[in-house]
Length: 228
Ligand code: URA
Image (cartoon, rainbow, N blue to C red; front, side, top):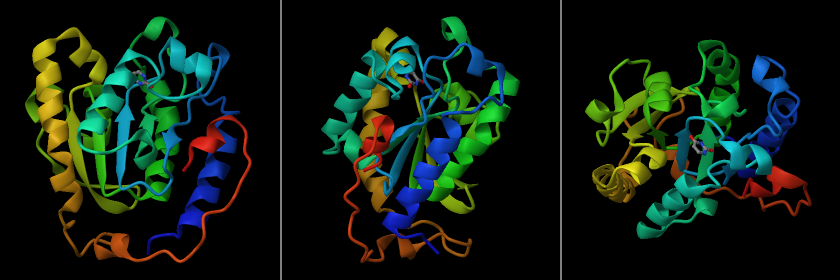
């Protein structure tokens, strides 16, 4: 059963409060800020990138650099804003020098990511690039092979459509990739409207149920204000 919007948001705030003091891996020693993720706690659409870069580490927010601007632009092309979606990463802390995430770091951060998925209950999760795609599909197939084709996955205890996409940072470097990414994003409204396969606990039409709870008027610091 899908949690109500107010309950979901408050549980996400609990998860955030736990995450910002996380010391599960060595990145705790080198980060400036934990980048928990930001956006709408009640989103149908979630993006999962790789890891914070320098600017994200400084601001404590995901995708705030040039790659983030591209993501915002592509969302705009399908009539959506960042406030409509939730954006997270495989890692919440910046790897020094933007090196690749290490297995221990990925493993340490994974429960936080799964918790976010479980709490937000998105219908569609877009994995951005190889790291997020391989982690959430549990498959070694590279992004070039799997991008653009939705998969049905069970994540965070429910069934979702997972759509692998090129990472916006890669798209910025390669114009052909940018066009492919743009075309794949254009398919999102149709995917969002598609019915999830039924028969799996938590999946299905309950997403469309009306939610009677009023939005809480909360005054919160920093990233908390980004939970829609
Ligand atoms: N910014 C992020 O937050 N994540 C990425 O994967 C890249 C840039």
